[in-house]
Length: 108
Image (cartoon, rainbow, N blue to C red; front, side):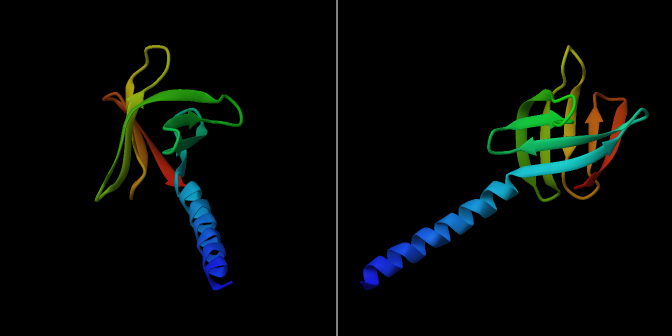
């Protein structure tokens, strides 16, 4: 009976941890440009980067996602031949588009 209890305990622990990992895989920012405020959602498990998932649902192409001592940095391409982007999810969150636009953000 004791080994069965251990197996159940281990399964419960794994289930609890898997829930924490899934939550940690999604990163959200609210950003502001000159026209509007918008929501950014990056899911590191599926490697997707979505702008306004509840309305426009615009998907940017992710080229790389790397953690550094400054936090998570996601690099990629916008849509329709637009500029590349660098999204910074650490302290001082922001998204830089090309070389001439920076949208400042806050964590959700």
